[in-house]
Image (cartoon, rainbow, N blue to C red; front, side, top):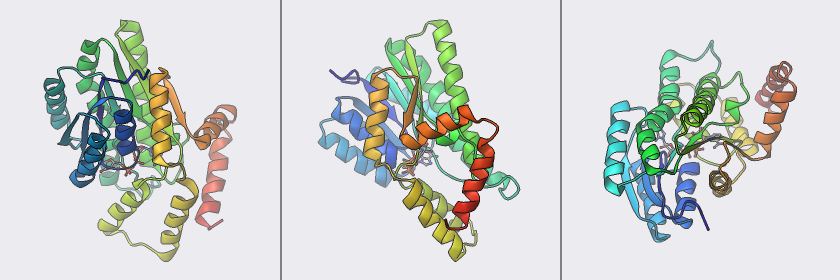
Length: 282
Ligand SMILES: NC(=O)c1ccc[n+]([C@@H]2O[C@H](COP(=O)([O-])OP(=O)(O)OC[C@H]3O[C@@H](n4cnc5c(N)ncnc54)[C@H](O)[C@@H]3O)[C@@H](O)[C@H]2O)c1
C-alpha cells in the first residue's frame, strides 16, 4: 500500500510541469493536497485534474519568494487540514548566464525563488511536519545542483544551495531525532515549460534575441529536456515512498553524478567544451 495514502502533501509550483505531475501522482496514490503557484490559471487546471482523480485539494496563489506570505500560507494549510505530512518545494525558474553578463536583478530573482523559496517552504512547514509524527521534506534541486555550468551561474548557485540546505537539514533532523525524512531531488532534463518561461522572461526584459540564440533555445529544449514530467513525478514519489535521501531523476542525472565524482577537476573542462559545441550548433 502507498505510504502517501491519506497524507497531507504540499506542492509549490503546481501549475505546470513537474509540480503539476507531482500533484497528480500524489492524488493517484491517495494523498490530500495543498497546491500553490503564482500562475492561477495553471494551478486551477492542476486542481481540477487532481479532484477528478478523487483528491481533496486546497489551492492558493503563492509566491514562494515572499517570506511572510509563505509563513502565513503554512499556518493556513495546517489549520485547513489539521495536519501537514509532506512538503514538495518544487517551484523554480531558469535564468542567469555567465557571471560577466548577468546583472544583479537576475541573480536576486533566481536566488529568491529557487533558493530562498525552498528555504521559506522548508522552515515554515517544518514544525508542522514534526508535529505530524511522520513528516517528509522534498526539495527539488537539479542536475545543476551536482554539476556547474558557465552558461547558468545563477541557476547552478541556487540549485547547489538547495542541495546544501537539504543535506544539512537531514543531518540536523537525524541528530535531533525528529520524525521527519528529508530528500533532495536532482532531475536531469524534463520536458516542461521551464526553459521557454526563462526565454520569455528575458525577452520581456528587453533582451535582444538573435536568430542564432533562437535556434540554440530550440536545440536546448529538443535535445536536453526529454523525460516526460509524468515519469519524473513517478520517480520522485517512488523515491519518497522508499525513503531515499537522494533522488536522481533520469540517466543524464546519474551519468553527471558519476562524472563529477570520478573527475572533479576535469569535469569543468568537459562542460566548457560541450557548451562551446552546443553554442556552435553541434
Ligand atoms: N525541467 C527540467 O529539466 C528540470 C531539471 C532540473 C530541475 N528542475 C526543477 O524542477 C522544478 C519545476 O520546474 P519545471 O521544469 O516543472 O518548470 P515549469 O516552468 O514547467 O514549472 C514551474 C512552476 O513554478 C511556478 N513558479 C515560478 N516562480 C514562482 C514563484 N515565485 N512562486 C511560486 N511558483 C512559481 C511557475 O508558475 C510554474 O508553474 C524547478 O525547481 C526546476 O528548477 C527542472
